Length: 520
Image: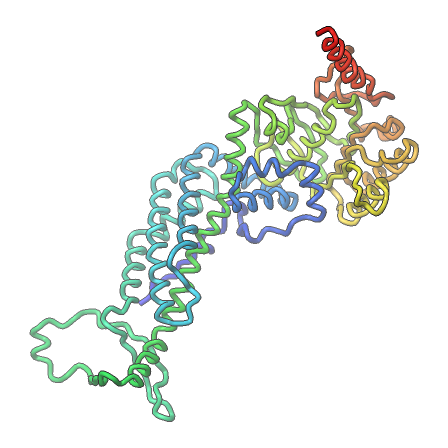
């Protein structure tokens, strides 16, 4: 009655995100991820990728935050899939729409696989499986028509499985078994008499393969079976027969329900895995419409101290602005500490955010916002940004900074990256510089890469010449007339952040407006 081979799509096809495990086996979210989301403005990125689609939001958010657990092989594996997706956008969206239709219709449909009545469970499972078979046919048709356009290992494995395992012969046989399971001609059972003459060892039997023709029926020697009829009002007898029937079909009903849930699970898994790449396509479309460059980065094993890029920009800032944003170019290979100083409102925080975003995007297998990007993978990524004064805080702002730093110290591991933005500036310069110097020195000893944006000249100056070759100094560019280019360039720290520029920009323009108003 059942197919002689098991249909196990989750075994035949692991997934599109990992070579040897499915997306649901992803690790949990990293510690202190709320600060990472806030400081890198990840909600802006997730919104651009997912919109209001709750599944897309959950999938891309988790992929971004758990990317630091991926190795180089996994990143390259996903990049190959993403490259296929970018070349075949319409087909990939068709696959996602098909899986979404399947899952959503089963949610709103008429199937209830938790019924405690075997007959209801049986027929609901049959209805669901018939629908799923029709969707599997559509899925296989996409594979047959478009498999040649995909080169990645993951898509090749998926399409090969669909074509090999879901041929017409197999699907027709499955449909035939479902028709047979409807028991239109009744249920054929065998049973034995128990110790007290009750029915025991009920076994559902397959019906005869063929029906005798009229001549065979006329020449048969005796009745093919013994028959009895219930009286019209024999409710007790009818109840007993119904109970026997239920017991006979219960195992079939349970098996079909499990099969339906298994096949539906395959569609759910495929939809979840495709969701990540659909989010990537959505983001790519947004950036391409503005002419922003993107590239598939080159990942390097942890500890190699490779970090070079050209045209690197803050993707989240670009998503918020109507125009393109300024990119930066630097070669930080073999640098353990990068200190960024320079003019106020010169693009230092934006540059720092572009570093963190690119790292997360690269490690989850995405493209990054740059013309070229090569970097080692890191085992974790943390941010320590200054916070605005919180009136609900029970301690001072500086104490809050130290508490957050303590939490990071409890979680950070070797070959990680830590981004500081104006940290420890809530106290005086001398104390803040000394605390920052001691913390950074301890992190560097543990093989942790540090980017540090600061206005603390004493802190930055303390690393000049102290670690030759291991420290890189970047400075927000300022032209002689005070114009900010929003680029960072190599340069040692200066004693001033040119706050006077902002003063004149603000108050000179205000005076000009007031004079013009008076003249009017």
